[in-house]
Amino acid sequence: MFLRLFTDLRAAKIPVTLREYLALLEGVEADLAEHRVDEFYYLARCCLVKDERHLDRFDQVFAQVFKGMETLGQGIEPTGIPDEWLRKLAEKYLTDEEKAQIEALGWDKLFETLKQRLEEQKGRHQGGSKWIGTAGTSPYGAYGYNPEGVRIGQDGNRNFRAVKVWDKREFKDFDDTRELGVRNLRIALRRLRKFARTGAAEELDLDSTISETARHGYLDVKLRPERRNAVKVLLFLDVGGSMDWHVELAEELFSAARAEFKHFEHFYFHNCPYERVWRENRRRHDQVIPTWDVLRTYPADYRVVFVGDASMSPYEIAMPGGSVEHWNEEAGAVWMERIVGRFQKSVWLNPVQQNLWSYTQSIRQIGGLMGGRMFPLTLDGLDGAMKVLAR
Image (tube, rainbow, N blue to C red):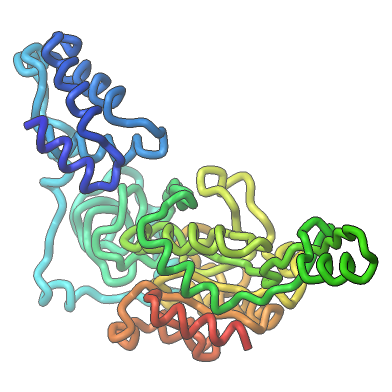
């Protein structure tokens, strides 16, 4: 059992050594865990985790390896049926034929009807196709199904059909310290390098030093500015929702870009850029940056790279108020046109397989707004994107 913990931690790219594993076994033999799961968890974490960046992955592996284990005291304590189990039992899963029979209201009618429901409904409702509730086919609520609905009070995506989400969600910043697979991405990004000698003259100019020393008859040291990559990059990263499936790949690109470019800035957005972006996902609700400020602050010679799956409701791109998280006064397409118009050397990198793009309307819309400059987030796609940006 303990050996599986060791091998699974190694598989999760947590740098655990055999010496640390033996230290854990010695601690168990010395009864430091006192035969309690909680104590064993802290003992294992102390012995096997050397860097706090790995704590989250350690917790996930530990939970997977020891799922279902409890102390004897926990096992005999009376417990009720968890609320989560009861709620999930109430969810209604429909057949494809039943889903096809449910009417999609359309944007204007959807919100007009929601306003009426809020005025008329007096209490909680479960099931059915009309009221705001759970486990039904109503366009409003949670844990049900509707092809175009407003999700209210649900812990995450189930069918990916909501056109509006009325919940506060917290997203995690990308880890710019990731190194797995980053090397190949850095090599691809180097196509965008454009060197210039900038800064103070602090690098030895060997050729000039030799030439001037020979000419003057004494040592004449010559310095020159260091040769640096002069390309400037703005990276816009889609985060949350369906992008959760692509976090690892996006983190690798983020880490590679941050290491490769000296003039580098990054911003987060969700699904489509609107009137504000942010730098930290944990403070995305109170520390936002107006998109107008980005357009005015950075010169037009910056290269812009969007990273996102472009998979969303078409309303989020085409309609005012289309954002799933807030009421945007102007459509996402308007902001996309402003950004691309300001930074004409811009590309969109999409982690979705390219052969699937034609099946998603929003991907086609974003591709059109980018003037066809959408590339798959693969080494070949990144190579093509860098060639476009380097022109």
